[in-house]
Length: 85
Picture 1 (cartoon, rainbow, N blue to C red):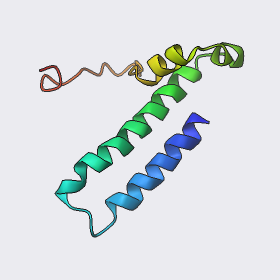
Picture 2 (tube, rainbow, N blue to C red; picture 1 turned 180 degrees about the vertical axis):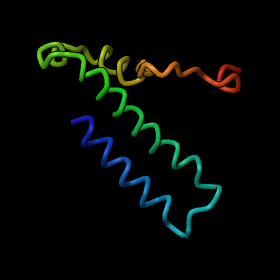
Picture 3 (cartoon, rainbow, N blue to C red; picture 1 turned 90 degrees about the horizontal axis):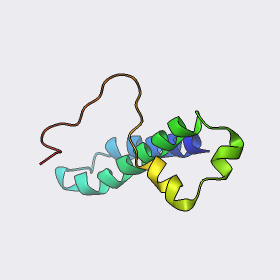
C-alpha cells in the first residue's frame, strides 16, 4: 500500500515538474508532494521489517512516528548543517 502511494506521488511530481507553467514560486506547493513521497517511502521501509500482525497493531501515534522517522538505509546519511540551524 505505501509503495503504491509513493508511486502515485512520484507520478504526480513528474507531471508537475514537467509542466511548462511551473516557476520558482511553485516550490512550496511541490514541497508537500515531496513530503508525501518521503512519508510513504519511510513507511514502506519500516513495514518491510515488520510482520503483518505487527503492522496491524501499530497505534496511530506509532504509525505517524514511523512515517516521520528517516530509515537507516545503511548508507550513513547525515543531516546538512543548514537543516540543524
